Image 1 (cartoon, chains in turn red, blue):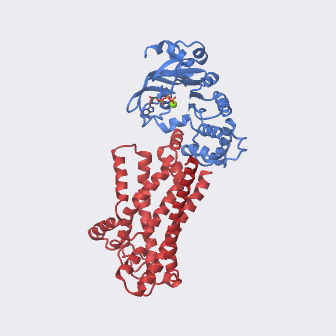
Image 2 (cartoon, helix red, strand yellow):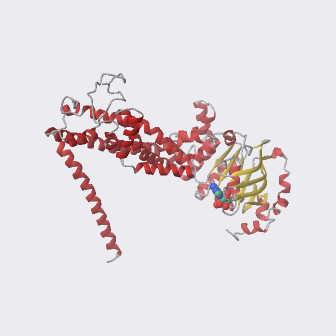
Image 3 (cartoon, protein in one colour):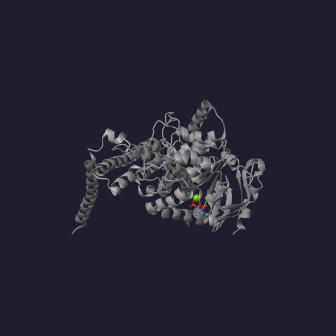
Length: 291
Length: 266
Ligand SMILES: Nc1ncnc2c1ncn2[C@@H]1O[C@H](COP(=O)(O)OP(=O)(O)OP(=O)(O)O)[C@@H](O)[C@H]1O
Ligand SMILES: [Mg+2]
């Protein structure tokens, strides 16, 4: 066989494999959405599971937990990414931190969940609550968020730092006003992608945020009140946990309907996050990078 | 090897202080693993262009970076570097103020990936309160100094990435000029540029000389001969010979210098 032919064959083979993967994903997602298409109604989205066949509170809980998790993990991740890329030279400390990040990112999420249960729920006494869940999810989220921010910061040439410093500006200000702004497209897509993961996570939440979704009052803004939607110390079953629960408890014919509908919402939201991440980072790159 | 330099330097080291912008005395520079500059004594005359030449790894960049403390955190610098009556190598010196007075330009153009306006405003806004009109006035002045104003037709909002390499380098030059420095340090500023862009930078430097002392590292010997008044030849961390450019190129005193100029070693 001549080289030209080999080249063509391998190229077609690769195209075929890529096509196969894409087809597999499309079939998989298509099937899930097709299955639940009749379940997703306005009533389904706006009814509490306590009084009917709805997922209103679970959907809100998922979003609330997501926001809290990001609020907790974003500053920590950005701080460690900056410390590891800009400030620290390669030494034992940074290698240790890198290793910790890698270990943490390969930890099964059920372990994170059990740690949350033993430490946050029991020892610290936060109980099954939004806060316990958010902290557990922070542990779960931190490694990949930090990794993606390290990547975003490393994409900014170090010559920028040198340029800023040579203008008599402190390293800290160059970082704040030049390096981080330039890394924002990467940072944002990292956040949104990790948001998708957090939104779909169940195992880390079962024993931390709990498996019950008390009916919430969306007009009660008093965060200390038990049925306030904002209360961070109330138990908060999320969408993903809800799917897991209705399926394991098997409460008859409705379980099937609920989980099919909930899956559609979960998949759509996660896809939306991914789509958004792409659009936003492309847009910012164009605006910022001038390419 | 340390002995040979003294003979050639003696006259210049006695230059009166008012003619000298920077004076290095017994400067040694150590990286973690090795010494890169050995007992350097030299002067950089005011409002002149001094070229630093020598083979790769001879310590030119290392010495240049001592002159505005860009070696802080990278290398240990000992000795004194006199600048307007103070030792700028003193740890008590305010390096942020110092670097405004002694600016630097690098081999690769490194504009911030933002507008020309942002690039020019960044440094100065960090240091002083300046009105918008005064700021824009000064932007125009420095862009005219580097012949960029007309090339961008006065459009300060243009993105720095949309400039050519040569224009980017001149923008970086303008960026340091915004701070009205006394001294400019340039580390092979034209080695990434084509001959035409190089000629433009050289013309800019010659024009700037009347206000600013310029010290330039270059591998391009013709460039050194074209624009510099004084030349320092470095070899393996030693300043081997220092002289008026004309003398050094026509009648080098050291055999090493002669060999290097003749291209007898890389
Ligand atoms: N960050 C560093 N850490 C350790 N050693 C270094 C570092 N930078 C430079 N050196 C060493 O110091 C010596 C002088 O390097 P320097 O960069 O000053 O040379 P140069 O004359 O500018 O060379 P070139 O013409 O290639 O730019 C070299 O031996 C180099 O290996
Ligand atoms: Mg160099």
